Image (cartoon, rainbow, N blue to C red; front, side, top):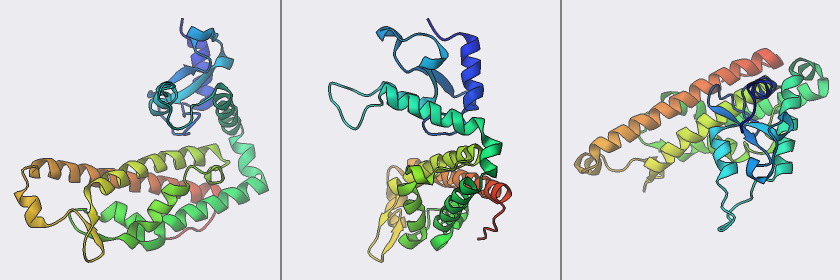
Length: 243
Protein backbone atom coordinates (compact mmCIF):
# COMPACT_ATOMS: atom_id res chain seq x y z
CA UNK A 1 0.00 0.00 0.00
CA UNK A 2 1.54 3.40 -0.98
CA UNK A 3 1.69 6.58 1.06
CA UNK A 4 -1.56 8.50 1.16
CA UNK A 5 -1.93 11.59 -1.02
CA UNK A 6 -2.02 13.76 2.12
CA UNK A 7 1.28 12.36 3.42
CA UNK A 8 2.91 12.72 -0.01
CA UNK A 9 1.76 16.32 -0.26
CA UNK A 10 3.06 17.14 3.22
CA UNK A 11 6.46 15.62 2.44
CA UNK A 12 6.69 17.37 -0.94
CA UNK A 13 5.93 20.72 0.68
CA UNK A 14 8.40 20.10 3.51
CA UNK A 15 11.14 19.31 0.97
CA UNK A 16 10.03 21.92 -1.59
CA UNK A 17 10.13 19.07 -4.10
CA UNK A 18 13.90 18.98 -3.68
CA UNK A 19 15.73 15.71 -3.11
CA UNK A 20 16.76 15.17 0.52
CA UNK A 21 20.11 13.70 -0.58
CA UNK A 22 21.34 15.77 -3.53
CA UNK A 23 19.18 18.86 -2.74
CA UNK A 24 18.28 19.49 -6.38
CA UNK A 25 14.81 20.79 -7.19
CA UNK A 26 13.21 18.01 -9.24
CA UNK A 27 9.64 19.16 -9.87
CA UNK A 28 7.65 16.10 -10.92
CA UNK A 29 10.77 13.93 -11.09
CA UNK A 30 10.70 13.05 -7.41
CA UNK A 31 9.06 10.32 -5.35
CA UNK A 32 8.55 9.36 -1.72
CA UNK A 33 10.74 6.42 -0.72
CA UNK A 34 10.05 4.09 2.21
CA UNK A 35 13.03 4.39 4.57
CA UNK A 36 12.08 0.99 5.97
CA UNK A 37 10.71 -1.02 3.05
CA UNK A 38 7.09 -2.09 3.10
CA UNK A 39 8.20 -5.70 2.60
CA UNK A 40 10.12 -5.43 5.86
CA UNK A 41 7.21 -3.97 7.80
CA UNK A 42 7.83 -0.30 7.06
CA UNK A 43 4.65 1.70 7.73
CA UNK A 44 3.07 4.17 5.30
CA UNK A 45 3.49 7.12 7.64
CA UNK A 46 5.30 10.42 7.13
CA UNK A 47 8.12 9.46 9.49
CA UNK A 48 9.00 6.54 7.20
CA UNK A 49 8.94 8.57 3.97
CA UNK A 50 11.74 10.55 2.37
CA UNK A 51 11.46 12.56 -0.90
CA UNK A 52 14.16 11.43 -3.34
CA UNK A 53 14.87 12.30 -6.96
CA UNK A 54 14.91 9.46 -9.47
CA UNK A 55 18.73 9.30 -9.52
CA UNK A 56 19.18 9.13 -5.75
CA UNK A 57 16.24 6.74 -5.41
CA UNK A 58 17.95 4.41 -7.87
CA UNK A 59 21.17 4.57 -5.82
CA UNK A 60 19.28 3.76 -2.63
CA UNK A 61 17.31 0.89 -4.19
CA UNK A 62 19.90 -0.73 -6.42
CA UNK A 63 22.68 -1.52 -3.95
CA UNK A 64 23.51 -5.21 -4.43
CA UNK A 65 24.30 -6.87 -1.10
CA UNK A 66 25.42 -10.01 -2.96
CA UNK A 67 28.18 -8.04 -4.71
CA UNK A 68 28.77 -5.07 -2.41
CA UNK A 69 30.62 -2.10 -3.86
CA UNK A 70 30.55 1.28 -2.19
CA UNK A 71 28.49 1.96 0.91
CA UNK A 72 24.78 1.21 1.21
CA UNK A 73 22.40 3.92 2.43
CA UNK A 74 21.25 2.90 5.90
CA UNK A 75 17.89 3.82 7.34
CA UNK A 76 19.53 6.02 9.96
CA UNK A 77 21.51 7.90 7.30
CA UNK A 78 18.39 8.51 5.22
CA UNK A 79 16.59 9.87 8.28
CA UNK A 80 19.48 12.25 8.96
CA UNK A 81 19.43 13.48 5.34
CA UNK A 82 15.70 14.06 5.64
CA UNK A 83 15.86 15.86 9.01
CA UNK A 84 18.75 18.11 7.96
CA UNK A 85 17.16 19.08 4.65
CA UNK A 86 13.72 19.70 6.13
CA UNK A 87 15.30 21.93 8.82
CA UNK A 88 17.15 23.90 6.16
CA UNK A 89 14.04 24.39 4.05
CA UNK A 90 11.93 25.38 7.06
CA UNK A 91 14.23 28.16 8.21
CA UNK A 92 15.21 29.88 4.97
CA UNK A 93 14.57 33.42 6.18
CA UNK A 94 15.91 33.12 9.75
CA UNK A 95 19.01 31.30 8.55
CA UNK A 96 19.87 34.02 6.07
CA UNK A 97 19.82 36.54 8.93
CA UNK A 98 22.13 34.63 11.26
CA UNK A 99 25.49 36.34 11.03
CA UNK A 100 27.57 33.19 11.47
CA UNK A 101 25.56 31.31 8.84
CA UNK A 102 25.76 34.19 6.40
CA UNK A 103 29.52 34.37 6.92
CA UNK A 104 29.84 30.69 6.00
CA UNK A 105 27.61 31.11 2.96
CA UNK A 106 29.70 34.08 1.81
CA UNK A 107 32.82 31.93 2.10
CA UNK A 108 31.25 29.14 0.06
CA UNK A 109 30.00 31.58 -2.61
CA UNK A 110 33.43 33.17 -2.89
CA UNK A 111 35.14 29.78 -3.23
CA UNK A 112 32.71 28.55 -5.87
CA UNK A 113 33.13 31.73 -7.88
CA UNK A 114 36.92 31.46 -7.63
CA UNK A 115 36.82 27.92 -9.01
CA UNK A 116 34.52 29.02 -11.83
CA UNK A 117 36.59 32.02 -12.89
CA UNK A 118 40.15 30.74 -12.40
CA UNK A 119 41.52 29.93 -15.84
CA UNK A 120 38.32 31.06 -17.53
CA UNK A 121 36.19 28.04 -16.66
CA UNK A 122 32.87 29.84 -16.92
CA UNK A 123 33.70 31.17 -20.38
CA UNK A 124 34.76 27.67 -21.44
CA UNK A 125 31.31 26.38 -20.50
CA UNK A 126 29.51 29.29 -22.12
CA UNK A 127 31.52 29.86 -25.29
CA UNK A 128 33.85 26.97 -26.14
CA UNK A 129 33.03 24.57 -28.96
CA UNK A 130 34.87 21.33 -28.24
CA UNK A 131 35.53 20.82 -31.93
CA UNK A 132 38.43 23.13 -31.05
CA UNK A 133 41.27 22.16 -28.69
CA UNK A 134 41.65 23.68 -25.23
CA UNK A 135 44.32 23.93 -22.55
CA UNK A 136 43.97 21.83 -19.41
CA UNK A 137 44.48 24.96 -17.30
CA UNK A 138 41.14 26.30 -18.55
CA UNK A 139 39.17 23.51 -16.86
CA UNK A 140 41.34 22.88 -13.79
CA UNK A 141 39.15 25.10 -11.62
CA UNK A 142 36.00 23.35 -12.83
CA UNK A 143 37.34 19.90 -11.97
CA UNK A 144 38.62 21.16 -8.62
CA UNK A 145 35.11 22.40 -7.83
CA UNK A 146 33.60 19.05 -8.79
CA UNK A 147 36.11 17.28 -6.54
CA UNK A 148 35.00 19.24 -3.46
CA UNK A 149 31.32 19.68 -4.33
CA UNK A 150 30.19 16.74 -2.19
CA UNK A 151 32.00 17.99 0.90
CA UNK A 152 29.57 19.02 3.67
CA UNK A 153 31.44 22.30 4.13
CA UNK A 154 30.56 23.27 0.56
CA UNK A 155 26.80 23.20 1.22
CA UNK A 156 25.00 26.50 1.80
CA UNK A 157 22.96 27.04 4.96
CA UNK A 158 20.43 28.98 2.93
CA UNK A 159 18.07 26.47 1.30
CA UNK A 160 17.49 28.58 -1.84
CA UNK A 161 21.22 28.86 -2.44
CA UNK A 162 21.79 25.18 -1.69
CA UNK A 163 19.09 24.07 -4.12
CA UNK A 164 20.59 26.27 -6.85
CA UNK A 165 24.12 25.05 -6.03
CA UNK A 166 23.06 21.41 -6.22
CA UNK A 167 21.31 22.00 -9.55
CA UNK A 168 24.38 23.72 -10.96
CA UNK A 169 26.79 21.02 -9.76
CA UNK A 170 24.59 18.34 -11.33
CA UNK A 171 24.60 20.18 -14.66
CA UNK A 172 28.35 20.82 -14.41
CA UNK A 173 29.09 17.14 -13.78
CA UNK A 174 27.05 16.10 -16.83
CA UNK A 175 28.76 18.64 -19.07
CA UNK A 176 32.30 17.85 -18.03
CA UNK A 177 31.66 14.12 -18.16
CA UNK A 178 30.60 14.49 -21.79
CA UNK A 179 33.65 16.64 -22.57
CA UNK A 180 36.04 14.21 -20.86
CA UNK A 181 34.56 11.27 -22.77
CA UNK A 182 35.19 12.94 -26.13
CA UNK A 183 38.56 14.67 -25.64
CA UNK A 184 42.04 13.46 -24.78
CA UNK A 185 45.48 14.94 -24.18
CA UNK A 186 47.53 15.57 -27.32
CA UNK A 187 51.25 15.87 -27.84
CA UNK A 188 51.24 19.66 -27.59
CA UNK A 189 49.69 19.60 -24.12
CA UNK A 190 46.18 20.53 -25.23
CA UNK A 191 43.00 18.49 -25.09
CA UNK A 192 41.13 17.84 -28.30
CA UNK A 193 38.85 15.44 -30.16
CA UNK A 194 41.82 14.28 -32.22
CA UNK A 195 43.01 14.84 -35.75
CA UNK A 196 40.41 16.55 -37.92
CA UNK A 197 41.39 14.24 -40.79
CA UNK A 198 40.87 11.13 -38.64
CA UNK A 199 37.50 12.45 -37.47
CA UNK A 200 36.34 13.26 -41.00
CA UNK A 201 37.31 9.76 -42.18
CA UNK A 202 35.80 7.99 -39.20
CA UNK A 203 32.79 5.74 -39.94
CA UNK A 204 31.30 7.25 -36.75
CA UNK A 205 31.47 10.82 -38.03
CA UNK A 206 27.70 11.45 -37.78
CA UNK A 207 27.57 9.93 -34.31
CA UNK A 208 30.57 12.02 -33.24
CA UNK A 209 28.87 15.18 -34.50
CA UNK A 210 25.81 14.38 -32.38
CA UNK A 211 27.94 13.62 -29.32
CA UNK A 212 29.85 16.89 -29.71
CA UNK A 213 26.64 18.87 -30.12
CA UNK A 214 25.22 17.23 -27.00
CA UNK A 215 28.38 17.96 -24.99
CA UNK A 216 28.32 21.60 -26.10
CA UNK A 217 24.65 21.85 -25.11
CA UNK A 218 25.33 20.31 -21.67
CA UNK A 219 28.16 22.79 -21.06
CA UNK A 220 25.88 25.66 -22.08
CA UNK A 221 23.24 24.41 -19.63
CA UNK A 222 25.85 24.37 -16.87
CA UNK A 223 26.81 27.96 -17.74
CA UNK A 224 23.15 29.00 -17.47
CA UNK A 225 22.83 27.19 -14.13
CA UNK A 226 25.89 29.00 -12.83
CA UNK A 227 24.57 32.36 -14.00
CA UNK A 228 21.39 31.70 -12.03
CA UNK A 229 23.39 30.68 -8.95
CA UNK A 230 25.71 33.68 -9.37
CA UNK A 231 22.84 36.19 -9.39
CA UNK A 232 21.22 34.45 -6.43
CA UNK A 233 24.48 34.56 -4.43
CA UNK A 234 24.89 38.26 -5.12
CA UNK A 235 21.30 39.17 -4.29
CA UNK A 236 20.98 36.95 -1.21
CA UNK A 237 24.40 37.59 0.30
CA UNK A 238 25.08 41.10 -0.97
CA UNK A 239 28.63 40.34 -2.10
CA UNK A 240 30.33 41.89 -5.11
CA UNK A 241 31.39 38.85 -7.14
CA UNK A 242 32.92 39.68 -10.51
CA UNK A 243 34.18 37.86 -13.59
